Amino acid sequence: MADIEFFYSAHSLFAYFSSARLSEIAEAAGRRIAHRPCDLDRIMASADATPFKERSKAHYAYYFGCEKKRWSEYRGAPILAHRPKHHDNDTTLANCMLIAGLEQGINIGPLAHRILQAHWNGDADFACGATLTELAGDVGVEPAPLLDAARSPEIRALYEQNTAEAIARSVFGSPTYFVDGDMFYVQDRLEMAERAVQQPFAGSWPRS
Image 1 (cartoon, rainbow, N blue to C red):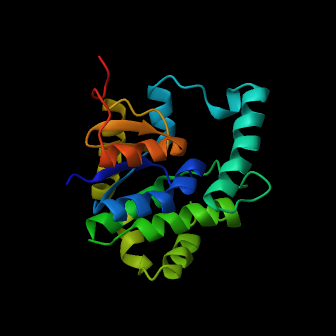
Image 2: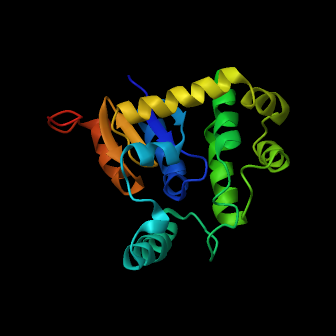
């Protein structure tokens, strides 16, 4: 069976909300998750999406106020009462650390979840090597080989490749999942993705 493809960035709130549940869905279906860490800023710019900071006050208050609290409660994923202070930092190192783990044959699911969790529930700085070292240790992953590789041209090239693939496949936000080629955007479509694992929806993506 094909992998469930998971396009996301290591600082994405809704990737955090979906991470544990996606693992449960994949395990129950006997499928693997193909992690695709990517550059969310570039993806949103390519899709002409309105940056979060430029959206209306009403939209921002609802989406990152009401919705955020509801999904935190619904998924059992605790969050800070405030916006993480490091949220605007560069995501490259964290995303590339995850890609390096993939290249080294590591199951990066627990590490990805820990980075997301620590950022949204612990104010962790995902751009800090020392912080990433500590988080890797939390899930039993040796951090040094991953961080060394994360800074290499080879891993940076794979990061660019993931981002380019996401853009080419009409991804416009994080998280996005593909089940047998069908696309599902953001974590509140996760139950629809679960249905697709069991029974595909009619049609295909992209829609004609």
